[in-house]
Length: 70
Image 1 (spheres, rainbow, N blue to C red):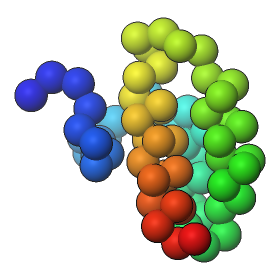
Image 2 (image 1 turned 90 degrees about the vertical axis):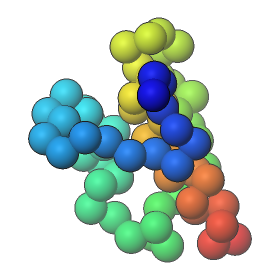
Image 3 (image 1 turned 90 degrees about the horizontal axis):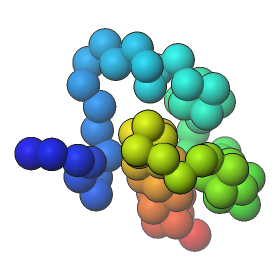
């Protein structure tokens, strides 16, 4: 399958994503502690390029999951 599924996942050892500043920012937070507005602002600051597709998919998954808690 090509692209990113709606329910985000990553391959084990994905060093590019796992070293991205926004991944590092959110990967050790509880969903309940994530500020949805700040998360949406962070996604809005990502450049709309093919190279940013993976971080966009991750942040979008976080947003969808955080919205389930509201």
